[in-house]
Structures are given as structure tokens and as C-alpha cells.
Image (cartoon, rainbow, N blue to C red; front, top):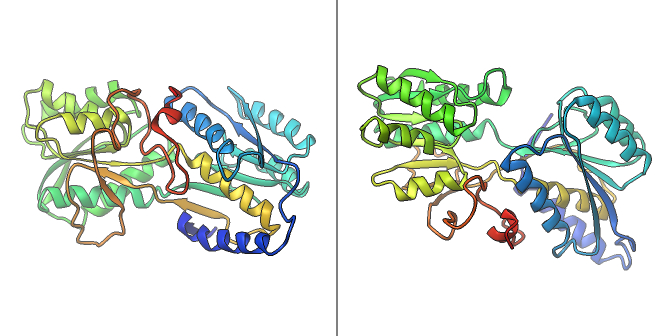
Length: 354
């Protein structure tokens, strides 16, 4: 399956716009009926993703052109399959899927494709070849963060690595990426690992345990908040060392408010749902199906300092700034950044406080 950056969609968007501009009445008179099938709502990211999808569908250029219908299914893969079968019978124009399984939904997804429905999976994607997949670049993310760490350490020191959540492929992929880059620096030693479970408590406890066992730790590569690692350093009376993490609001604020903190935060943006809606409308407007079906969204990295990668990775690194990309008055679990660069979604809209 081929991959490309979301930026590569621009050429397809331009083609679609040119085609429809040249053809009066090319847009459908009735709004496109687009279902969003979501298998889980039990964390801040999923709730934000759903809010952002609704905001996107009601803003220009989609206002009045998209009838977005959200189906949340808690529990089993079979429950999502049953829900999708009902959706397919209603014959919508497109289905967006945040999937319970990469493989088990495939026969159902194929049924939707055979019915002429545009299917786009996002976030937790599916492998059905007829569907499009929109997701963050989980190979690039750990490479950039590990390279940042090596840069901060001057190529030498002792680090610990968060192994994420046991049995989760993305967790294994992130750790593999961290280790792959650090292997290029023989004077950087990985002295321990812990399972942060993508939660503040396990992250803080895991880091605290390794701090007790190792008198020298010069950097911490988390897969979660990063703020739990900083709290563990403070509780142990240790200097604050460079930390990698992901772009939750609490992480950004902790990095900004902790004296001497050096952080880089990768983004798995909740506006992946916006990108999926945009792709669906582009396909429906043009009547054409792009050949490449795996689309990678390169969200920016948020950092407290500069980035001078020796690998010259094409990383969009944005400096953390209070009120611009970190928000003291909004929920700690808000995922940053809140809006794609082609639409303005306010922090309050993303947080559901407007």
C-alpha cells in the first residue's frame, strides 16, 4: 500500500476545484450524506475528534454540503460490523471509520465499496484495499523525537524509554523508532524501559521506579504525556532532563511552566476526522478515485527550543507558546494543535466550551 503526505492531496484538491468550477451545477444539489462510524468514545482524544468532525461539517466550505451522521458503537468488533451493515443499507455517499479492528471489518467494508460508497478509515485504520486510510505517520514521529533527544544530549548520555501499552502495534513501532535512531549514537545508552500505558499514573510510576534504580538519567522518551515524567523527576529531587511526549494540553503547559524543562511533543491530531471529511468531499465532487489510498498526516511538533537535526528530517517544529498552542483555561486532555491549517477551528470549539 503506497503512502503520501496529506500535502500531496493539494494537487487532487486543485484538480477537483478546477473541474467543478468549469462545470456549472457539478456539485450535488442535496448535501452529501456522510456517516462517521466510531467504535469507542472513552477518552479525551475520541471525544475531541467527534466534536471537531461536527464543527468541520458545519463550517465553510462544507456548511450546507455535508449531512454528517455519527454512529458511536461501544464494545465489540461485531457491534461495529452490525452498525456498519445498517449504515450500508441506508446507501450514504460516504462512510468514515475509526475502526475496532484493522482486519475484521474488511468483508463489511468491501460490501460498502461494492455498493459504490466511498469508504475512508482514519486514526485506527483498516486494511481493506478498496478503502482509503488517513492517519498520522507513526514511522516518522519517533524518528523526529529521538533525533531531537540526541541533539539535546549532544550525542551522549543515559536515557530511558517508554514501551507504551503492551501488545499494541503502535507502541512497538514507536519504541523501535526511538531505538533505531539512538543506535546511530554509540554514546547514548538506553538504561531502562517502562510501560506508560498512555496514562499519567503509570508514566509517573514507571519513571519514578527507574529514577530510583539509576543515579544518572539524562533523557526520557515517553509515548504519553511527558508531564508525568517531569513530575516524577521533581518528586525524586532530580534535575529536569529533556523529555519527549505527545501534545496534550497538560503536557504543553507543564513544559512551559516548569523551569528548565526541554520538551518536544508530537501530534496525533484529533482533526484527522476533518481530513477524512475533506477527502470524502473531494472524491465525491470530482467523481474520481485517487489511486493512492494511504494518506499520511504530518502534524507539527511542539517544542520548547530549537531543532538542529543532523538527519535533516523535514520536521515542522513549532515553539510552544502560552495562549497560542497551550491553553491554561482549557481541559488538560485537549489534543494540540486543535485545527488543520486549511480551516479555522478555535480552541473553544475543539474543547466543546464555546
